[in-house]
Image 1 (cartoon, rainbow, N blue to C red):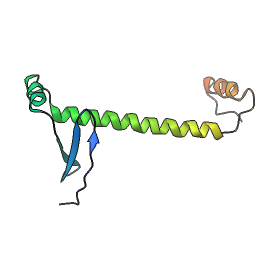
Image 2 (image 1 turned 45 degrees about the vertical axis):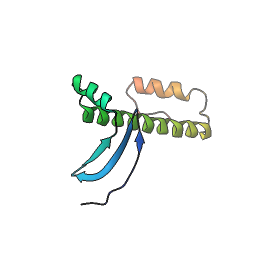
Image 3 (image 1 turned 180 degrees about the vertical axis):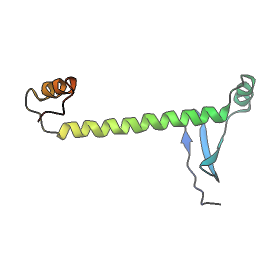
Image 4 (image 1 turned 90 degrees about the vertical axis):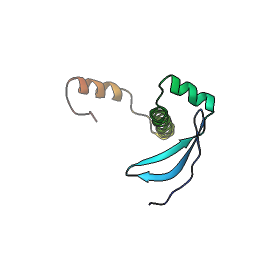
Length: 101
């Protein structure tokens, strides 16, 4: 068995990785109330799929936010383009030409 680690992720409830690796998958455990589990079961909610989807969405959102923050910093330090540069680039793209210098 590969080495395990502990991480606590909070997303509507606490998710604690157990460190049991199966190929590319890792088993996680979520602590929820009995009532919440009962209601999810009654509604046919696949908790594993829900947690997986929620985690994927949260990661994508945070990664995008990080990229946007980096881009904002890059824009702040980027030199200004000479007037008309963007217009030339757009015209050349429309006409199927390479970028204008």
